[in-house]
Length: 579
Ligand code: ADP
Ligand code: MG
Image 1 (cartoon, rainbow, N blue to C red):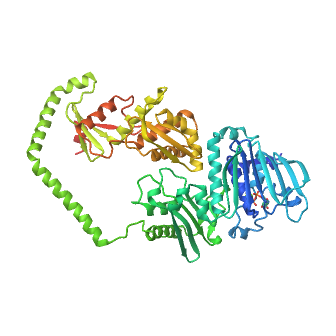
Image 2 (cartoon, protein in one colour; image 1 turned 90 degrees about the vertical axis):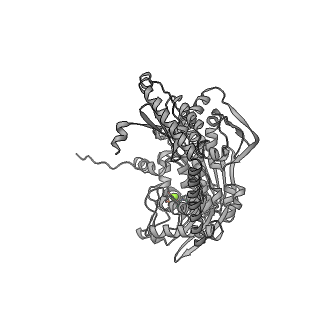
């Protein structure tokens, strides 16, 4: 008896769909790519409940005749390639012929389409990969596809979908990528009857401005380089406009958005030293390359590609971006002589100062040493008591070493505190405590601060606004894509509201979580990491003592919110072993 069965079409399509359709945004991407490949000039996307209820895409492209519209739902049916060699000459977005079959395997689909040579259009209803109705209709040129009941037959997938703002964010992200690379097309995106974008055909610069913010006009620096048959073009952002959150970095290869960390690194590297740590520059760069030198057939979603010579591209990206920054006078011109003199001067001054200080303070220093010695003697005689009581008694003064470390002798132990981790813990627990109260203390800003976000990040703000409020930020929505910050949590002096909220968004993006408790924890971690008030300056004795006291008043003094040690203990034998 045979054991091997040929799986029915609906099952094999469902298996393939697993890779093509992960969430509503995958459907939006695939349908938009089809409309673009069909040479549409106008594309309208209407979604309900972030695509969970329905996705409708209306285009005015070439359309399909009756025969093609019946075929297009079969797996591996495509009008875009015919033979294997064509895989290396691809100019269209699609070519694998598996999007429509995958979508039809996991949802209800209606397609209405008409070509210019047919008087009437054709409509097909399809469910579970089976045609349930087909008929002629009167229709304008182009194709309309309506997708409903996504994942109706895969409950695990449906339940796995995130909240509407998060799913909408994914859709907006896909939309932005395609709207950037197709700025000659008019696009409208509507969710729950609210128009999110209405983009008129334009050049790349204008498209960028209408997709992001108006003030981007001043931030954009053009980039245009040609190296043999490879060209790199687009815009990069000025270093001072970099953000604490990722999401405005785009690389396109032959007009296809790709994800490639190696090439991203080539760009980040050129900004090194020009932007702060953990900030990300803006860039939208298009690589044009011979289609034979790049393989896009790596994954069904086609965002990964393999280059014949990736190293060469790395170097080209790096040098194009450096050149752009240089020609726009963003990197200061380098005068090697001046540079060397400058360095020498700094070192000499520094040494001289140090020398002078010790000279001047030598008698004071001696006294201090004596004090430390005396205190240590007292401490020693108390050693037993301190540890038997198991209470923490701090007598001798802590000292700051190598900027981030605080040394403190306690009985016969030396405690080394990691200042950064300690302050993170203190802040984390402080904000955690205040967020548990029904109201949290906030100090009012003298002037309200207005912050505008891009559409995609704004969806995440909607998702986390209540959690941000709960820790003491007095914020509210203000018009389209903006918030107003009226107050910040008490104890957070000297912060940049925009950067701290960007850092919340970045943490949420990285963690990709959706549970209420976890979101708050992510925000608390982010705020404790970003608001280290005392981290940069030299600490005085009182400040060090206060850090240690406050640390030991915490519920969990041993570990930082990231699970790192806040301090280590060295006793005599441990130190002895180091020698
Ligand atoms: P692919 O895009 O890889 O060819 P799809 O499953 O996405 O595969 O689409 C199958 C075929 O259906 C396409 O090759 C194209 O001929 C046709 N098609 C899909 N969408 C449209 C559309 N909006 N307008 C015209 N033809 C379309
Ligand atoms: Mg396609």
